[in-house]
Image (tube, rainbow, N blue to C red; front, top):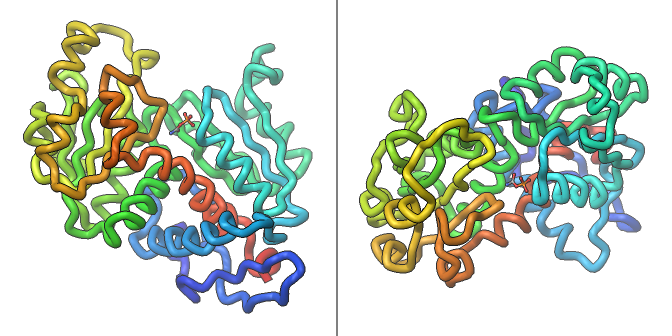
Length: 336
Ligand code: CP
């Protein structure tokens, strides 16, 4: 999306069914893909968040549908399990009136040995406009973008990036705090295997937040400070006076080896408990991208408590994904 001009920021030309057409001040972002936060400027991130504000309003109407992507086909291609991301993309696509198709790798010819490239070339032959893909391999979406004409949206690739998660996280922070710049954000958990960490670090640094990242030394990626976070192995230090605490899941399925003695030990040293929440600012918000390991990285009293915005994150995922699809695929002819 680099180099895209931002026009009409905050005024999205989304038409309502049966109402007069609003002016269409906004064209799509210039680049055709959303592969990672790394490729977005701060201005482009703000454009997506502002557009999501308008999309959220559509979700609050009695009829939650606009014709913006009518006639466009979106393929959701998931090579890895997902509840929130897959569902919210599908709802977003339907709210924008796109024709949607869901393909789970387990029910496709991938199980017969077909390669990603061949799978994509065959899907391309049916002329989809957008492919939303989640894949176990880092960089798989970049490969896809090189070989297909459709716009590609990364729904999570290996341990690399999960850009729409970071965007919905930013939207949720902005919704509750009114800003991102200057906030102290503590990110705690399995940093090593987390694509959510990588996308959030990129985004939060671009928008001027101060990030402290906490994990046992064995779960800290090399170069954490270079990535824009203050590393620590003390959760008490991380959450001290934090405006936002973002907990990350222990990703046992990606661990090939022993990274900590036991889940009980991990809970004792790194879980977010009510006592630890009290170290943060009195108006702290608690986030988690899900799925949660209750009683491992987060106490149920915290996950379901008054500071939790975890379900707001899920709700905001629809608006943010509508914004991304609109900006990439709506274009001037789609939105007018
Ligand atoms: N946050 C997230 O990516 O959740 P899912 O794996 O359920 O999509």
